[in-house]
Length: 157
Image (cartoon, rainbow, N blue to C red):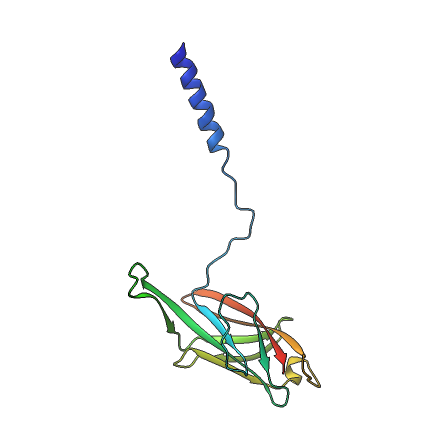
C-alpha cells in the first residue's frame, strides 16, 4: 500500500511539474549578428549599451553621423588573454530612414566598418535647424542573412 501511495505521489508531482511549462509571451527575437555603434559630430562613439543613443550634429552644416558595424569574434571567450574581439564589417549596405519609414540614404560600410550619413537638415524634416532640434532615425541592414536595425537620435548642436 505504501508503495502504491509513493507511486501516486510521484505521478502527481511529475504531472504538476510538466504543466508548469509556459509558452514565451513575448515576440520571438533574433539576436543581432553585429554590434552597432553610433558616432556624432563630436567624434564620440556610443557604448553600444544604449537602446537609443542621442548623438550631436552641427546645425551650421549638413547633419552627419557615422554608424560603425562590428562583428564580435567570440572564439577566444574562454581565454582571458584573448577575450572577445570586435572586427569591422565592410561592404554591408545600410539604409538610413526616418521613423516614418522614409528612406534618407543608402550607403555601404567601408573597410573600417563605417557607414557615413551626411544629409541636409531639410531632408530630415527640419527646415531651420537650431540647437536642440532632434530627429529620430533608424539604420538597418542585413548581415549573414540576418536583418538588424539600430534606433538613434540626431540632436542639433
